[in-house]
Structures are given as structure tokens and as C-alpha cells.
Amino acid sequence: MNEKMFLFIAILSFSLTSAIVQTGPVADSSYVAAVYEHNLVLNPDPRVPLSRTEALQHMQKNLDIYEEQAARAAQQGAQILVFPEDGIHGFNFTRSSISSYLETIPDPQQESWNPCTEPDKHNNTEVLQRLSCMARNNNLYLVANMPDLQPCPLRTDPSSSCPPDGRWQFNTNVVFSSDGLLVARYHKQNLFFEESFDTPPQPEIITFDTPFAGRFGLLICFDILFQVPTITLVEKGVRQLIFPTAWMNLLPLLDSVQFQRALSLGANVTLLAANLRHDLMNMRGSGIYTPFSATYHHANKGDPEEGRLLVARVPVLDPLWVNQSVATEEGVVRDDSTSSTATDSEACQQESCFNSPPPEIASSVPPSSDTFILSMMSDPFTFVLLNKTEGEVKVCNGTFCCYLQYQRSPQSGSKELYALGAFAGTHTVDGRFALQVCAVVRCAGSDVTSCGQGVEEAETKMDFLLEGKFGTKYVHPSVLASKHVLEQPEHLETAADGRVSMKHSNMSAGLVTASLYGRMYHLDSE
Image 1 (cartoon, one colour):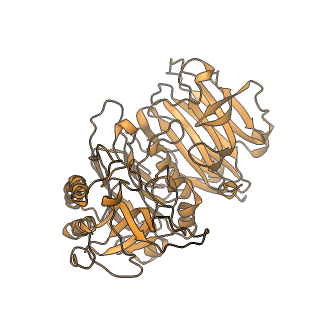
Image 2 (tube, rainbow, N blue to C red):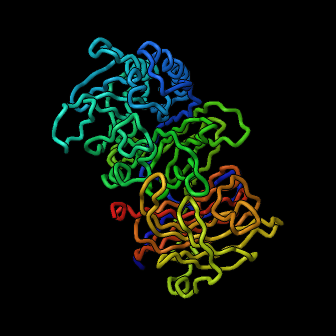
Image 3 (cartoon, rainbow, N blue to C red):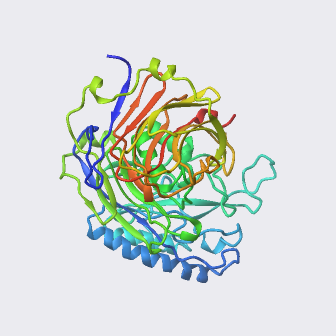
């Protein structure tokens, strides 16, 4: 027996053949989760200040929709409901123009408050009161995102983090229990060009406990790419994450559902992801993900611009809760969203499970000499074309190398161009973070200069084995097919020496991207 760790996952998708699978969670305990992708009502001129009355009138329009969706979720048995980032108030405010939208949110770790039953305890908390009553009236846990105002003492000390106007403004998640109690408040750590908000003076690692599934952790949008809070939560044993987001899709590597799924698989967690639906900003794509299943929705171009409620029964992953809980009914999935589910089977033998080449074979394949460098996601990837029906190729970016065995479907008469790309370095555009990435991508056209550009559709199905030797254990795998269809890899293998292999075959649609997205968190500050 060698020192490799195996994660075997299979997919039943669109009634296609499933292969070897990962066994399910420790116990058969489950709960019903819901996320709502919200087609929000925007302030048409967010940079112009409004009165508090006008701001409330605007926010009530979105809260009216939330009320309807909370009732629908409750009717389907949801025990927890997640709404997206910016869904109540919108975005593109200035620091001053958002003022009338702010409410001062008390710290639930410092005081106990139920806004629904104690509305007079704090002034100017109409949104908090309505969210609290929404949770209470529908008997579910509710997670929403809203702007928070916190006073801070003005100091002459240049090192003080207090803004000059003497107040902090935070992008904030709030959580209410099923009786309306405010149980958690999280301030976003990693802002993405949000001039109306401040970064918290100290990073926050916030969790809350539920009676039906144990512990959940909170993050917001851009946070998902960083060690704090996301990986910090995972390393503390939190395996159920709540993810309100206003995600602008960036193909070929960071489409919404693509990375949501990748994070769930790579970190071995449940992710409840609620995105906005706003086509002008290319915001769409939400889902309920576990290491064993995915229930998601991603609108395509031309689809009606409307909200979407997703509801699914998922396994409890909190290790403390699983050990204490009583088994419940088998999982079901509701709604007409796309769904893929891993099924239970006998664990396969190591020798027969995965046809990954031994390290000496993969390492003996020489890097291709026909490489070219192009920008993908604003990073200089080294590419090699896949110009045969089948074969094996290797491409290196510096000392980091990616290996691929591939075979195009014989039924595919497509002349689409594909390439294998490798990148190791620090991404510096719209954020700074260190990466090691192996990716098979469909090029946008028939010319090599189109490789690395985003495409949404493909006809070519491909069986493949993609492998890289990573300097991090945080490698997020994804297989994205035509029209934003997620495929769950047949096999994922992580070896003790850092090798990560992903094998997949029998695709349901053409391949857009297959990626191993490694995050080198320890190098972010260099």
C-alpha cells in the first residue's frame, strides 16, 4: 500500500453512464437547503444620495421578492435559505451615496436580539426587522447580505484604521434563526472594487450552529479565492459554507458554477451559493454543492432574465453533528434546475480504479517543443495545441508542468481547436493571488491566438487524464461542458508527492474547460 490518498467521485448526469464513485458521508443525516438567484431591482442612479425613506422604498421592492421566495422555499421544506450579495440594496454606490441604505447591525456575540419580536430595541433597523420576521414566519434559517454601519473612534494616530469620517461601512452577511433571532454577522474581508465599503480592521472567522445540520461558515463573493476566511474555516473543520455572491463570470476558468463546484470538490465541503441575476454585468449562476452532488442553475444567453429558487436535500457534513445525529430519509432534489448526483457503490481497488500513469512515466514524457505563450485570465500561460485525435502532451511554465492524455470522441466531426495550458505565478489583475493551473481549453476560433479566450459552447467530447504536480494541497478541479453544464470527474487522485490527477470520459456535451486550479495561498504576500 503506498501513501496516496484517493477521492473517487462519479456522476449521474443527464442519464449518461456513471462510473466509479465516492462513498457517501459518514451518516445518512440530511437537511433541505435553498438558495435564491435574485434578479434584483436596482437604484437607477446609485451615486446620487437618497433620503432614508427613498432608500427604504427601493429596498422594500427587493424584500417583497425575498418574502415570496422564502414562502416558496418553506413550502418545499427548506430549513435554510441563502440570498445573494447586494441583493437588497444593489451596487455601484459611493461611500456617501450608500449612507441611507446603512443599518447598524449589533454583534450577536455581544448581545441577543430578535428584531421581529423586539423592533424598538434599535432604531433605523427596518431591513433587519423584515428579514427577522421573514425567517420567523417561514420557520427557516435565513442568510442575507446588507450594508452595515459601525461607529469607530476618531483618532489622530496615523496607524489608526478608523476612516476619516469616523465610521466603518461593511459589506455584511446576517443570519437569522428560524425564530427570527439574529445569530451571526460577518463583514466581508476581500473587497472587489467596492468604494462604499471598508475592509474590517481585523479578519473575521464567523460560524453559526443549527439544530438540523450543525455548523456553517460564512464568506462573501471574492472571499472564495483567498485563505481568509475560506480556507481558515475549512482548516478549522467547518465543512458547510454559505456563499452570497454577486459574481461576474470570467471564462474559461472562473465561471460562477464552475468555481463553486471546484471549491466544493477541492475543499471537500458543502457550498450553498446564491448569485445575482444581472445580464448586463454577466452575473448569473447559483447552486447547492456537496462533494457528492450538485444542484445548480446557470442561465444561457437569450434566457429570460429572472430569478431562480433552488431547493435540494443534502447530507450533513459537520463531523460533530454527524456523529450525534439520527439517520433521516434519502436525499431528493426539487425544481427544474440541473442536477448531478454521485451514487453509493463498493469502493474500487486501487490498482483497477484509476489508469493514472506511474510518476516515472508521466515525468519521462518530454515537454512539447511547439509551445506558445498567450494571456488567459490576464496571466501568461504556456500552451501546446492538441492537434491529433488522441495522444499525450506535456507543457511547462517554468518548472511547473502539466501532463495530458486525451482522446477526442470518434463521433465528433468538429474541427474545434484545443490547447493544454500551464501557469505558475502571481495573478495581479483585479486582485493579487498566487496560482498553479493546468487547463485544457477550447480555443475561441481556428487560430492559435484565440486560445485562452472565453467560450460558452463546444461540440467536441473528449476522454482525458489531466495531471500536474502541485506545490499546494488546495487544488480545485472542474470540468465545464457546453452551455455551462458541469460534469463531475470520474476520478480524482491526490498523491503524497503533490501530484493531482483528474480523469473523465463519456461527456454529456462538448468540452469547454477542464481545469486543476491550484491556489498557492502561502505565496500571496510575496
